[in-house]
Image (cartoon, rainbow, N blue to C red):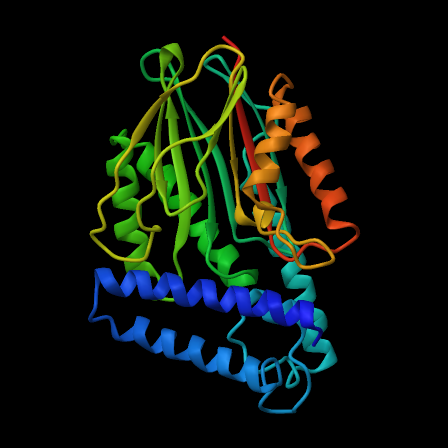
Length: 328
């Protein structure tokens, strides 16, 4: 394992430990979460002592891909036959095609809004979540969601599909936005264990350019206005962390020609060959330079800048972007 790889894994583990410690201040008596915190501490100790990433069954390297998906992994796929590994690869390919079918139509335009998204899975499947749901009631509104399920790989993709179906069902009930996220949180937290949660931004447009946002532990959306690029909204706890968590909404007015951009941490936490993160500062710089572009070209400019920043370094995480431009 290289020093750069160790740095990435350490950052992942420390981030997970920090999230768990923050969560434990809200609910001190959570045995499953405390056990998970102990597992994280053990993994950090193994990383320091040199045993991290070594399969406890065969003694070989677990593998970069598996560790990026599950940084607490202590076993590889050494007990699978070649035929079983081939079958697993075929199943993953099918799962990826099914997941792609859950994505909304590209270039959707509705109720005076133009949209574009980019959904870049790191492997065959992704734990990122994007959806756009038009609602014809009244003058028409557009629901939009972007999120990131904890972890990577198959488990995260299954939870992403679960969250997708759950939120779509709640939209049909026409709940207030904070009530929708509260209901999603209650159901999601009861259907998963304490290791899994999802950061999420849920939004709803209204006539006249008013947009309601509910941020559950996610990076803040960015509002592009002439001469300004501003992160908006405050954040609550992630979805699925605790049943009964309160969620609050924020409202922003978006003028004609202005754009909202949402993104997952696969963008801002991407690293260059030296291990430095792309960061929100670079994102805001590129968005400011392209604030007059249509959604598709705007996201293209962000990804082009990211590729240059990476300098040939391969992606380490799923990456998703969503842009909504008020056209009328």
